[in-house]
Length: 113
Length: 112
Image 1 (cartoon, one colour):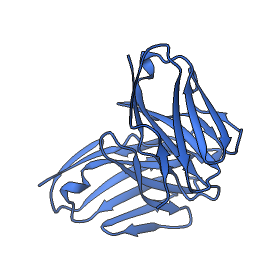
Image 2 (tube, helix red, strand yellow; image 1 turned 135 degrees about the horizontal axis):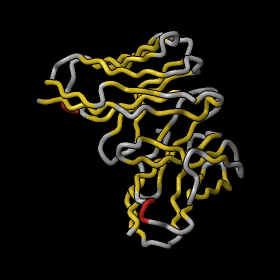
Image 3 (cartoon, chains in turn green, cyan; image 1 turned 90 degrees about the vertical axis):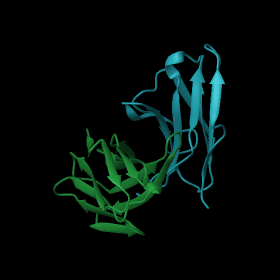
């Protein structure tokens, strides 16, 4: 069974800082890995999807990397802004069925103005 | 803009009522999913469907059923709502080929 861990569970940083969120998974035989953000009381918004053949993906100030062999992904946020405050979750396909995913428990980020 | 639409943002229902949560996607995705999200427990899969009229149990199917009569619509049914089904319900869809999930905006259900 795939297990996904996100550390830290919560993070508070001053505006302008660069920061890294971590996602670890136990089974490295994955098809892809997806990062989401969730605002309070809302659904999940997809940020980046990394295919297993890729090492990283970039979108604006966000950069996600994937190291399958070590079972890790990182989400790098450059020049953080108060609007980045949200919970960030990673999602990894479950073993035996790539259309079912296992979600991490998330990192709650607060960016202080 | 592609979308997964959940019919209600907030619902309040009484114990014992039959409750329908509706989800519609416009991306021609084969796969659709229902999750519930609770503080400290994360997202838990209730049911999913990989084709019309097909359904598979997830991790917590007890007390729920689903219906998928058309490709674009996936309904979650609470046969007799109970207070422990108070939660945030999230619908998602995906296509074959590993292109990731798209989520709806969620339905906050309160059972009183």
